Amino acid sequence: MSSKADINRLGDALRDAALNNEMLNVEALVNYRHSFWDAEHKVAYKLATEVGGAFTSRTKSTESIVAKLIREPTMRLSRIQDIVGFRYVVSDLNEQESLCGLIQSTFPEAKIKDRRIEPQHGYRAIHLTVMEAGKRVEIQIRTRLQHLWAQYSEMLADRAGHELKYGGGHEKVKRFLEDISEKTHARDLELIRQGVTLNAQQVHDEFKAMLPVADTPVN
Image 1 (tube, helix red, strand yellow):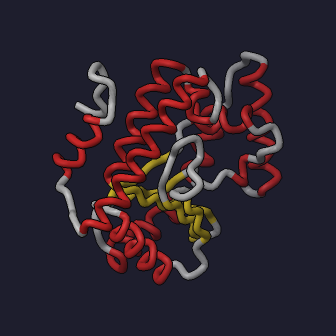
Image 2: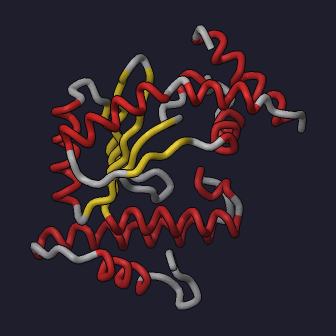
């Protein structure tokens, strides 16, 4: 895809096709995602050699891309910042801050979105967007509790409707998720004040205790 105009035309075509229940040009979208490979590999190399730590790669699905284009009618495909990216899950808020600083040192032009104090529909994390090889790549940093909340939110969205992730859905369910998010954030802050670091199993058990008896966030 040679130009931003071509990319945006593809996005418009995907949106129109989805709204009219027509066949999506999935092949063209796959090719667009492939155009991020060079940037993705370069960012991964810098993270591995200059930042360190364990991270996973993530690619935005066709369903998620099309849903975003429909949900935000003025959104252009070329402006979606998380086509490809990486995710760190760290032990606590201190490690989250430290890692964010290391990534900023490696990518000085990184743009930061801190969703911890002002969460998005309960979602908390630090997101950094970096430019590499002319492409935007997103790097997420979550604490273990933030990550478990995000997993649990995804599970509820599968049951109650994916609009739940974007501020839609049943008000009672939204309030419940926001309440759990507040509890996890309060616990993250409390652990820092206490100078305590929990292992992954301990965090899992604490998060599970915040939920209704019938629900579990992960197996």
